[in-house]
Amino acid sequence: MVRGFYVQNFGCRATQSDGAALERQFEERGLERRLTPGQAEIVIFNTCTVTASADQDARAAIRRVHRENPSAEIIVTGCYAQRAPEELASLPGVRRVIGNSHKHELARIALGAGMEPRSAQESGESSAGFVAVKSLTAGRSPSGDLPPVPGQQPSTGDQQPIFVSDVFAHTDFVSAPVFDAANERTRPNLKVQDGCNNRCSFCVIPYVRGRSRSLGLERVVEEVNRLVAAGYREVVISGINLGRWEDSCQKSDLSAQPSVPRLRQATTDPSSAQGLTTLRTDDRRPANGPPRLAALIRAILERTELEKLRISSVEPMDWTDELIALVAETGRIAKHAHVPMQSGSDAVLRRMHRKYRPWHYREKIEQIHAAMPMAAIGADVMVGFPGESDAEFEETRRMVEELPFAYLHVFTYSARPGTAAASMRAQVPATVARERSRILRELGGQKKVWYMRSFVGKMVEAITLHGQGGACPGGFTQALTDNYLRMIEEGWHEANQWIRVRVEGLAGDRLVGQVAGGGPQVRTSPRRASLPW
View 1 (tube, rainbow, N blue to C red):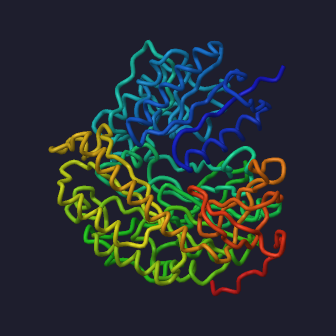
View 2: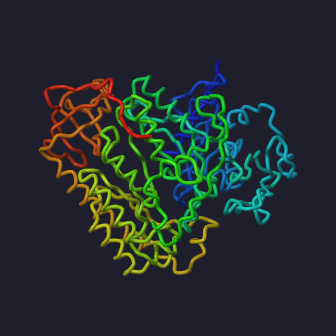
View 3: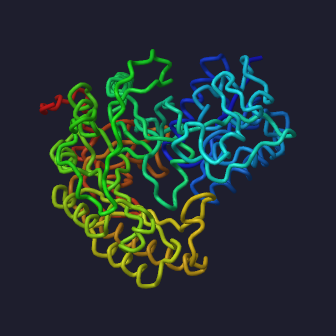
């Protein structure tokens, strides 16, 4: 009988994309994907560690699967595995812990294809490219110029094999298209960037995902063309820090394609703590550096027949004049901008080590809104950051109230071991942080309703998410508008169709619409954009 595997993902879109790549690794080695962890001989937990709650969720899931399927070989990978491998290795049922540093060869390690025994790792010897876990805690990383993973503990000899090395030396790019749900294969998400060179004081992600690196332009175009050929009409491009994408082609295991030549690595953008003063208005090919995000978007528009491109979260300092104009002027790019804010207080942003000031952020949002008045503009906002006073929180609340946001993602600060913010004084009491979160969530909900109501009586474009077999009860079809609003449409329509809909009203957090002309208007061969390179 063919062995089966199951991958359970936690966290962000990048983690979901990593999980899709892991599935490919096992399928290429002849294993079959199972529908549930209880049916699998190998269960892979692809973890997140952005908050303490994320860690707790992963531990609880591991314990639950071990109870329900005690014979399963449990493998833990992802950001939590990179940060605290010994902690995870001590959990019952865990066979191996494989950090992000070795995720690109996880299936080979899991299936025991000639990997070094754990004793070789503990000795500190560089065998088969591995670095001992304990060497990462000896002051600095083996590369000598960046710190080790925060909170990582030295290994002990009585736990299961751990495969974790210096993530800052990691150059492999793990990615595969991932979809919103098993029965909603209409909007594949393609990770084109990983890692982060910023050092926000609250964030552990750079320490567990390493330096910023990107999937090369040619590889991105190739993958988008594959998706278009397979019938997909919308693709989402994403990354840990998408705005830092650059065409410095790295080795990649995407689709098991041959590696591409490595180009010269660009230097880190020298933006100062004062904010946006160093932003370029044209990021197609910065001086002394490779092409940036706008160049990638132009290449997708010019060299593929993709009907709609959606851009995920981009930091405010990376929304250049050219990028805003490109999104605004091109009908094939979804009118949606997610711009992390974190705080509206200058003092808090400085303690966070963010690279912009509140007035810079305000100017950028107003610029995006002026260029695209009907676009959905969203933001991440953090409450309860160490030292956040009532007055500082009020600055954030007021900015959220005044800016044209369509939605908010509100997060409560969670101390991450080893980060600068974790040792700051004046930690905000949990009760205060919860109340501030409630206030912003309520405000965000009001702004979302106001934004949705502005479309009643208007025509919008939407892509159908479920066809007849998966339609909503009562004869409705789910869809997503060009500007990121969920919608239900009267009648049953095939999935993966772009249609024009008249908005009739609201039903909870969704628009209710009527398809114009009585049926979908299918677009199968869009005219390529005629844009300068």
